[in-house]
Image 1 (cartoon, rainbow, N blue to C red):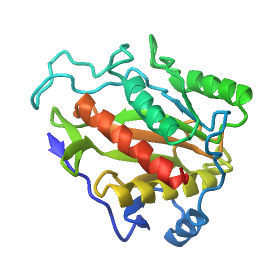
Image 2: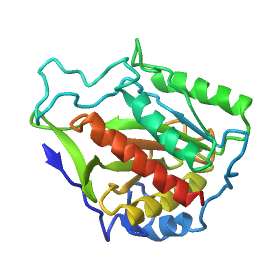
Image 3: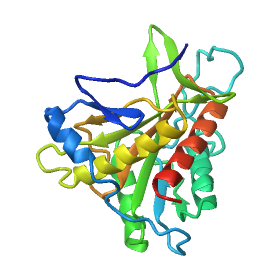
Length: 257
């Protein structure tokens, strides 16, 4: 089932330019709004010989609908170790766009969720720490996933129409500190607000509201750490690749590249 998720307003929703943020924390609306201001909390060096962005995948085996038509085989797990069809393919497209824009980006394609799903965040934590130690120039770490929205056995495909192209929708997830686990979360929040505004401003309808919640996702490791949901298991791979391309173009614009 294809569905478009629009932006929210009022109540728990706060504006991010043309986009919005869904505040699922206990923090007052005014507090979150103030924390979102200030712009990027870091500076990315354009055309740097050293990596500025790391793209990785805690759940790399997540994949999309590979068949034609709005159906999926009964035995479909939505998982694959094939790097040409799983999250590594979307991450590679995002890295390509960023590198062409002059933002030095590297990608890790480790299957942190294979052969065992349990413990995948612990394994990806170790991977990110290793990259940060080797490349202290890294300002941004993007953990690129796809969502899994189901209703009564139907797999929901979040879609947007961008020009003449149907693409998957993109959602950023930013964690909030919960008892000291994310002491610098406000810097990730500022990053999310800037990127959301750039994406939705350039490509109306592309994004779902940023999810701001008590999530962790290893976002304490850098002050530019976000989880990125590119579509869901109801989307086609082509829709996801197109969304990854647009999301990366939005990020490049947000970084001034």
